[in-house]
Every structure is written in C-alpha cells, then in structure tokens.
Length: 322
Image 1 (cartoon, rainbow, N blue to C red):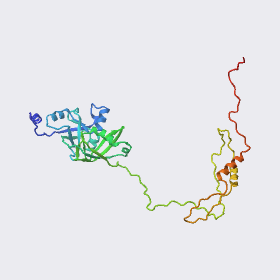
Image 2 (tube, helix red, strand yellow):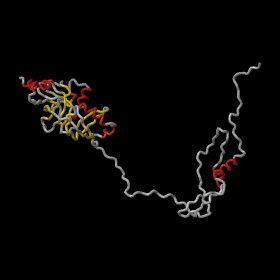
Image 3 (tube, rainbow, N blue to C red):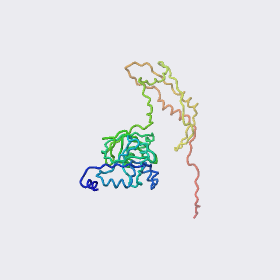
Image 4 (cartoon, rainbow, N blue to C red):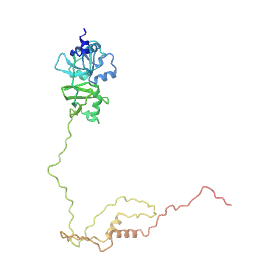
C-alpha cells in the first residue's frame, strides 16, 4: 500500500504510468468555451481525468509531466504531449484536433497514455504546410510565442498553431537530440524549410555572351570647310508669362526662332584630324551666346515695359481739413 509513497520519499524505482482512455476532440468537453477550445486545439497538451493525477502523485515521476499517446488499433502511430488540466470526465481524455488526425482517431476511440521522460531539445526544423507562412514578417518570433503552448515535439508530427486568427500547420521534419524532445526551458535552434507548394520564381539568367551596347547613330562626315547641317530644336513651355522686374517676355514664335538661328554664322567643322595631336578650336567671330543675346535685345527694342502696381490709391478714412 505504501509502495508509491515509499518510492517518492526514498527514491525508489519509477513505476510506469499507463492508462487506457477514450479520446474526444475539444468541442465534446462539457465545460469548454470558445477560449478553452482554441487553447486545446492550437497547442500540444491534453485534458486528463482527476484519477490520472491521483495516480501520478503516487509515483516517483519527474516534472514537467510528459506523456506518450498511441492508438490502440494502430500502436505504430504515436506522439508526445503535455497535460493542460486534470478536469476531464473519468475514462475520458480530450486531444487537440491535429493530434486526432495524426493518430487517425475518431471520437470515442481508445488510446493508451503512458508517462515518458524526454531530453531537452537543441534543434528543430519545421516545414510550413501553406504558403501563407510567407506573409509573416517575423516567423521565428511568432513560432517562439506559439510553441509555449507545447510541452514537447515529435518527429513527423504536423502541429497546428493560430496566428492572427489564421490556422498555420507545420511538419516537424527533424528534432535533436532524439526523435521526441521536450521544449520547456531549453535553448533550441530553429530552421524552416520551404513551404509546401512553394515554387521559386524563375530567374532569367544573364546571357553567356555579353551583349555590347548599340553604337550611336553615324553622323555623315563633313569635309573641311563644309557647313554642318543645323538641327531643328523643340522649344518646350512656350506659354506667356510676366517677370517681377517689369521686363516683358518676348513672344517669339518657332518660325522667328528658326529665322534667328539662320542669321547666326554657320559653324565650320575642322575634320583634318591627325592621331596624337590635340587642337583647341577658337572662333574668329563673336561668341554664339553673345550674338543670340544681341539678336534678342534687338527684337524687343520697340516693346514697352510693363509697369507693376501702376494704379491709384484710396483711403477709407476721410481727410480732415483744419
């Protein structure tokens, strides 16, 4: 009668905890509300009956409590979990939905729950089951918060977490140092594989042969003493305007501009170039910009100036005569 108590007090051998219960999903729990259902479905812990707690305290077990859950019909299917509460009805236990799918269980099926001691995790690799995972800005921080609802991880499990009211599933591809590890108070390195269904965008590789830039359009050669053909220029912003200094802007049409350009002395191109020599060309006439300025001033010689603020003033206050 005192075997369990003596084991606890005097460090006796660990007696196995082994129970067979009927499993149900969270909505079948009589005391469950929406918060309790979400907490159970999106975590890695189960609900056990009070008799399980009574048996556990009589055994020499190590904390935290972790259990191996396996199917009676398919013993090769198993996973590991923690316990959320000991408030289930006698003979029953309540599992997360993802755990029911993992073990191929239906409502009311029998499962076997045994106590298990697991090593602390050092490494875990996850594979997201949806490309929605790519929309998360900081997946490591998100998973760090959500894994607090789990006590352990088993290789091959597809766990489910909830983030921003969205269900995300992850395949546990690898864990170290064993196939099942405890993740409570541990320093664990996390890696992510490419999400299921993710296709890398095709990157058009650069051509093996480097393409040379196209040569500029060839300009017909101009012989010595010949006149280079003048190019037509487009003048933008041809609207009217006024200046603050009172000077008026000349309303010069495109035809007048073309005529003024024709009056300018033509540019003589010197093509007698010898390799190795550098010649600085100097014109024997006035600077082009100076001549343009003189022509512009001559064209507006008769134009009058606009007088700003040329109106008469008035005062509201009547003038008194003494």
